[in-house]
Length: 256
Image 1 (cartoon, one colour):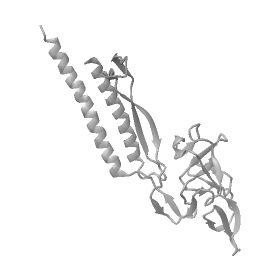
Image 2: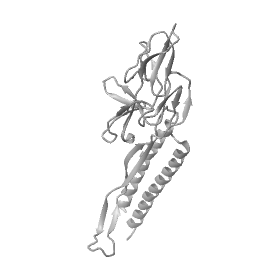
Image 3: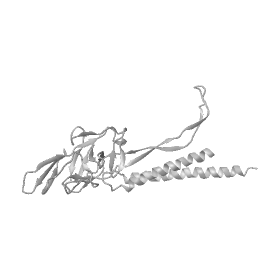
Image 4: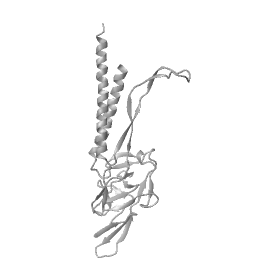
């Protein structure tokens, strides 16, 4: 019975962590380009009471010690499309990430294409992190056009012909689910994700860039609600095991 109590406790702990993941998904349902997270579990070690000496029955007697959260993974399916008509709102249609330079000189990657201009005309994200390669828009620019392959053209006051001022390249990974989330809609590569592969939007498997649109979160609210119900029921069942085990202990203690 003592083993049952501990096994049920691991189940409650695992479901509590799973609920936290679901809560985070639902909390970010309106976060631009947010990618939903999924939990995976695995059983714990087993204690063997009777080993199987031959290949013939009976099978060995084994009792497990519960479960634990083994890993979490991101789903990088495409999110819904939101039209903004803002010239620096960009959506990647397909595979790829925008590459940003952090203050310490390292790189981070994002699907959030909500960009803006600094006072010097540099294109940055909402936190001031610059695109890599850096792109600077001239002063007195009246119109910015970004093509599907990432070419940035600016029309300056007094001119009618736009001038190309830079190109937005994209990055992709062999295993994007292995990326490390560092907050602020940013990811960093790991051993599991592999190194970043840079390329031109719309070519060699890279997604194209749509100007005036943003990718919304890929969280399926109904699916998350169903998962939340399943987690709640699993938590209740494990708590019932603890309650039943306690009752059995009480009965054993009353034996004279």
